[in-house]
Length: 391
Image 1 (cartoon, rainbow, N blue to C red):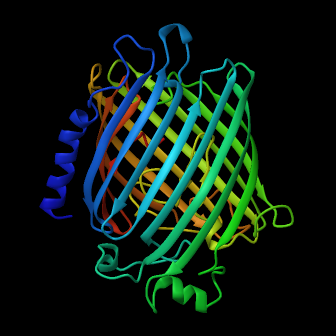
Image 2 (cartoon, rainbow, N blue to C red):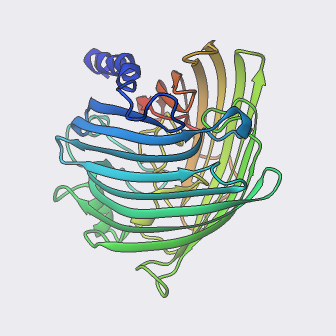
Image 3 (cartoon, one colour):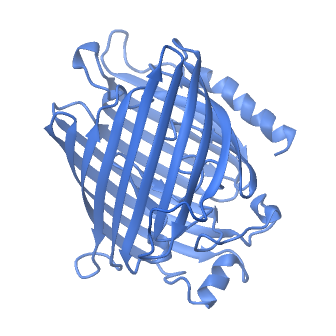
């Protein structure tokens, strides 16, 4: 990464706290709060990006005694790039508004003109020049228009039952005559390319959550087991199953030091097409692709794609500023790999390993996060900007 790109990232880190303090529409003393910030940045893959975020929230009160960052949040987020990519998303989230209940509904229209795609499987390779954006061989067009919702109900103590659905209309296509996707299509490794596909799945799961706070936990555990199923005979065009099991632990070592870790396994049954293989389930959100800020920070976004995945993350945290504008230094090691359908196993063989460090800053009573991390992995240096804790 050139010094000019690094300078731009540092500039974003400097101006974002001020941008988030634009005038509020609610009068002083109102329980309702709002947060608005514009977005203006540049990415090698997408060019100049312009957008904004606006959220209305009912913050949790001290008397609520809940680790959730909000009682209720309604947010509108969107952006457009000079490459032609764009998205807009409306998110309504009520994690603590009704005692014992959590509800979430997301509507999103996303169109990525130059999304990374490096092939299917754990042995895929990549050319560093293409990763840097010198051509479109490792790029695809991807459209995702979806509605996603879930309801969680406390069963007893920290144990919750989750019921949800995900409806998505996705479309994948090549950007040029010869690309990694066109090669995979010719070899029969992928299907439904250039075809709009309706993908509907229902999911059921259990969530055990003892975290002290959800925005950036310092103590406790989060264990999830979620099973989803899509059936073309009922709704949609594809049939498959998806099972995800994950466990996270957080340990505070005094005022400044902390440890955190996560292990997760993900497996799909049936015959999931490529467009269905990017998603990994979680109770409050979904990961889109293996690699990048949510899964393996030393890998490029969507670096490895397949039906099954296994990964782990291990962190040492140090609170440089432990209180107002809490600033945390993080050192981490990430490991993981993908498998073909039905090949998932607990193994240390052929794991992709990477590690690095970063800094994360909390805003708005620690419910908003901005950070920067760099890591070295199988393909070299990866620099990421974070807008939430990776896990």
